[in-house]
Image (tube, rainbow, N blue to C red; front, side, top):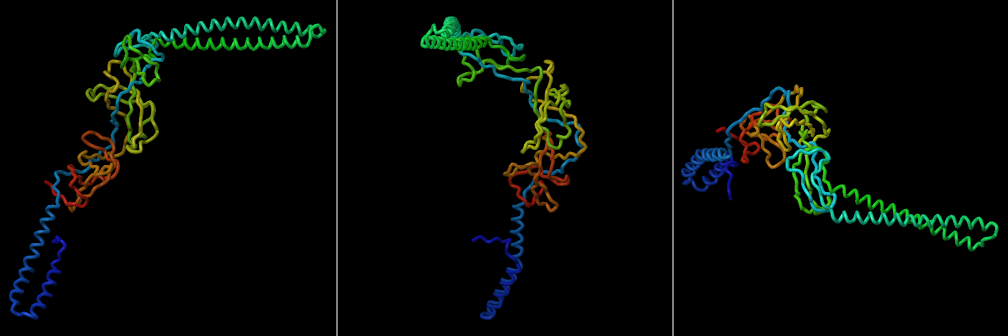
Length: 408
């Protein structure tokens, strides 16, 4: 059984020793001198031993930390700096609309193309055969229509003549009914032939329209960013599980970019507002863009709002798709901004952010904070701190709430 010396009270020890004194002196006075010596020994040295052990245990529980700092409070920025990535204004994959073999590819990677420009041609022997068959079917249907039209007109005229003759009794009722049935039969045949012609025309029109896709053209002016075909390659109409895109094309005469504006800065931005964009490797070269869309909704986790930018490209600024950029958005922020060293932040075992404060009695206290912008060597704090706290800058897993710390 382990005894915790910190829980031992000296007053309890003294009381036990006094009780023992009276019990022993009643029965054996010879032990008095020895007992007195033992009492003085215990009463004199045991407190020192307890104090020594307690001090040693406390020393072992103290964590040594390197540095502390207090948050920095400064005037609000006039410029909001955010990061983003350039994306093409338009981007699409071009798939084949028909099955066939690539006859020729006319463009190269990175080539600028105009809307409607032919990128490749496809040979489609099966489709061509279907189109010829459909054309023949239309000719046959039209010929049959002419025959049924003649039969219909003849049967109608014959029935009209018999109908007039039946008034004078020259034609029997049975003969009139026969001519009427011939007329209705020829009429149905004529209408059916007309429907066959319309169907044949639709089939031929469909196949002729598909033949237009033998020429793969650019849907808009841009740059070929990828191609997956060469002459002789077998292509499958898009939508099939085995089909792959023929080309990828991007419109890069202007770019899109997305940034996330923190909640406390949203009120300073508006549609059409000018934005300065620059590449971190060349911060002196500024490109003027503008805000094109504001989502109007804050993200539940980051508490920031998605904002879309449009960045014109004159082909002289060295801009390209996927480029990491920085944006300067002019704001009129009169609020104070609090920042701390990023090394002060810890997450413990939760998704939340914490800092560790050293209180006047050298004990520590974990404070939950809300992080704002990451400014590189500083991190903005939106909530949780007053600005007077002493914060540990080398937070480690050994620190516990209420623990005492010393400085190295």
